Length: 306
Image (cartoon, rainbow, N blue to C red; front, top):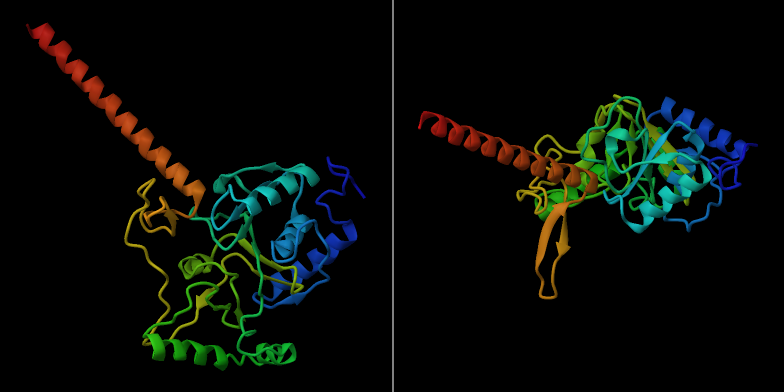
């Protein structure tokens, strides 16, 4: 057993536990969307705060990895900062807030706006891995339904939403079909992020510590959100740009700005927002410098002519 910089085993978990989780991950990758049971261990955080994702990350992280942790898209929230600091202490890995620099991205409830690339791994924190749980509470029955690919209950639920509201009312944790076979809960990401899962070049791993389940979506796997021919899946849309960086076509959070109900909408992904804002600033600075140079050249030309 090798020790990390904090005196704990590298990644906190013991090597036997990490091997057990890796075996579960291999099974999950071999059968995309299938929930693989595993013996969830205790980690220094309460269940429901990312224990499954932490265990998956601990099992796959190595000394050469670069880790990014986000919570609702933000790098600076309590959950993200705590987990990032935890792995920096027990694994000695380099951490980052830049999506493009990370080899492992652990996330709670968002997929980054920056497209993921081959070689990257995104680890989802999952509170409820069973998409049929609120329709069928019996575990034995949900397992039978998955074995038979009998997902009529979920389609009935979507139909009831359409009959009642005119559209599917589910805006997060929207159920998906993986590789045309298994119904899967994508974790409580907004439906806005569902299309990003389809044929994503990154390896997607899901860990539910409290429910003791692991599942996965290998790179370039088909992930289709459920829908009907006359009512296809429609992700959330935002018409307004980000109030900070001006980005459009991104997921926005409403931020309260005063005590009288004032608010503004800003990017949920803080890394994307920061880079977009800096890009606009650099562009404006470059344009100003170009304009100043052109003005100076014009003045010099006038003086020479005179």
